[in-house]
Length: 639
Image (cartoon, rainbow, N blue to C red; front, side, top):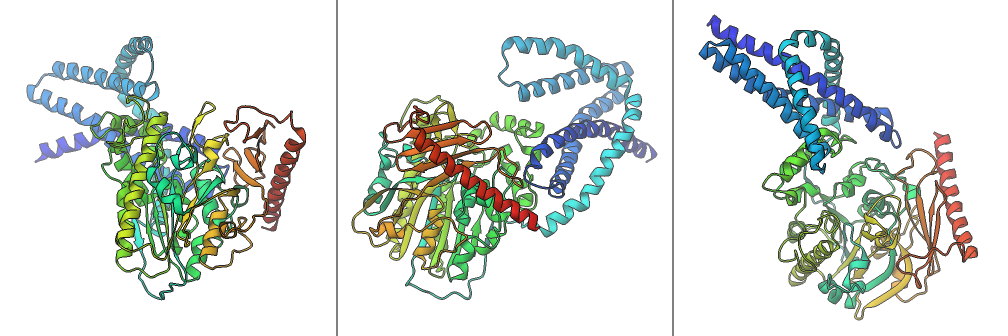
């Protein structure tokens, strides 16, 4: 009995020694990363908001340190037990030496794979030459100098241990009081009266869908055959411009009816809309008798709702993780972290970010696993549509408003068979191939077709308006791939807008310049609700009814480099006037002017050739920027 107790005590003691070492190494890395994160975080939030995220990262990182230590310690302990049975100290030392060399070498190889994945063969050889002696030296230190190392790291163990201890109540508070651990929420149906005098409204947006690659808008490949047919007796807007070039900013504009410089959602993780909890579309619809539903696939599309309490104004709301299938290692971990911490912590995904060592490791492990890249967090579009259909089949109150945000055709471009290869040869990169992107659009078109046909067969479209649009576009030109960043070319700003169900018998094509913030105003007008003064957009119903639209300037902007809580001094703004478009970089003063009728690809800057138009549009941008900055300054001073 005493012998067994001594063996257990010895095992725990040796595990504790290894854990202390791993713990210190892990937290030295986390400390450096925390300074890096804070440097960006302070642009849009306070330290009091940063602290809970750091505490969560510390606890999760401690847990990973425990697991890592166990994986290191267990083989060594197995060697010790084997050698204990063989009663040979020499054999034990030999095996332990080999083990440490192999372990350290493997660790160096993994780090190399994560940091220099595309390194040439010559670099491999250099790393090998340096890595072998480094492995031997580190193994020697761990074997012969363990006690000395343990004494040296004791102060760090206490410091980092103290912070982990403090983190426990911080995380407990935020997890209990601020987090709802649900994939979906459905409120009880009561207090609603059926009102068929107002239409049901279904607003569907596809993520990163440019109208430049839709055949319904004239693209040469048949990417949207069904939508083309469906739109023949709908109203199609040719010139809708996105409020920004990435999701959170545009979704915030769609939910608030405000431009980006007004709602001030600039950066990833900075989702606080100015007055967002009260001044939002779902709140107005719910107050005026609409039953509200949301099916949101993209986490960045969900964040403006959840981080501003806007999700409370939906009777039914689903997160994208509800519809995720076949998750790989990375996706499965991301799913759990999002579910349990996504709403309460701004940087809930800290340790799985792809620039964090653990995130890199999980991503690498996922890519070499059987499920591969396709498994990661790609919500099932068909499942989303069918979930909505199942909900309305249950007899929900009318009128209803449904907000459906589909993740596709957002990258990576991974169209399923038989769409894969439809428009070009396989083997192209899944993040840069325009053929794969086009095939993914075709896949969206087919799913939308099934959705509309099912609603038609079930007789659910008799008093229903459907709005089809996107959050932003996607670029494959100007050496600019994807979206976001300091570019506002037409591929990322030109998005579809098709509205159907307002008793049209013949389709209409409207060439007027319109803005994304006009969509929420139009939804309110459709619902016979007065558009509030705080919305900057205007209803499109009058122009749909044949009335002339007063000429308006249209804006798009990106302020990712600008602190959220300061005046706007960095970023890029675009303004349209008739056929002209001006793009202005606030920081470096670069100014581009294009005549889109003559130069639709935006290749010829005519700012100095037509200075009168250019200067007038530039003055318009400065005027609105100054106005926005003055409003923000006055509000800050009032506080």
